[in-house]
Amino acid sequence: FIIEAVELARASKRPVKVIWSREDDIQHGFYHSISANYCKAELNGMGSADYWVSRNAYPPIGWLWNPEAKMPSDDQLALGFGDIPFALNNLSIEKHAVDSFVRPGWVRSVACINNGFALGSFVDELAVKAKLPTRQMWLNLLGDDRHVDPNKNGFKYSNYNLALTDHPVDTRRMKDLINLISDKANVEQELPENQGWGISFLRSFGSFVAAATKVEVVNNKVTVLEMHTAVDCGIVVTPDRVKAQMEGAMVFGLSIALMGEISVEEGKVQQSNFHDYPVTRMNQVPELHVHIVESDAPPGGIGEPGVPPVAPSITNAIYHASKTRIRDLPVNKVF
Image (cartoon, rainbow, N blue to C red):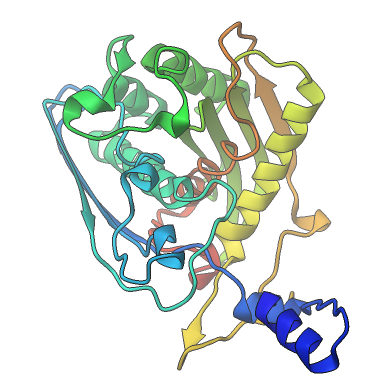
């Protein structure tokens, strides 16, 4: 749109204001990178894992200023991928090259969306395999209370440009939050066969966020009944603003998880407006609950951390309600 404004202003020899329509914006804008993640682990018979492999591939945002770029930078990999905090004997994290066919750009929580989805989904799958509650699998994987330094694993970790001394990768705070969300949502309650709870967690942007979602699956239709978010973002100055950010993150996360698909055919984006790129509407919003941890730790981010755990909490809930595992978003490809 900048080039269009310049060309029109030159042709008309006067100032020009260009406003793109929604169709223009959806079909010619910037897009969250398509991504693929591969996860593999070996369970150790004690409700945890000893070995873990994570691989990912997606067009990097760096492509915007370097079209030769094919792999994410260390800063992008630090967003929920290079900082896996589990107590493992061996951990391998790998990135792979991929071409970009549309312009990648920033979406709320950036690469934490895809990395958080892979991590949260896989932990739930491990829990099912080990016949454990998902809460317990998270706690077992996290291990003892400690501060994790991903740099010691040979990874160049930027920690969202925050000092690790002030904003540590703290497994105690993680475990406390997973217990809090599980208790507040009562995720281990008995439910009808067609209902299920799902939980997930991700530390991002200096804050810790867990999500729990309850769904019902009837006649191949998913209805989200209830959502909870628990957040430990350090010192909270204005709780209402934190609550609003978490509520907005849940609604945004619903949209991208359930129906946020962009498809390309012969170089052209197929979606154009709300009729084929829908967002969550008021009558689709479930009960929303936000639980804020009181803390005297330095403040972390709040605008982006609420999004990543939402999608895996939804798809995990769908599995527990229907035994259908969603590994490819959005959900409306299946339901």
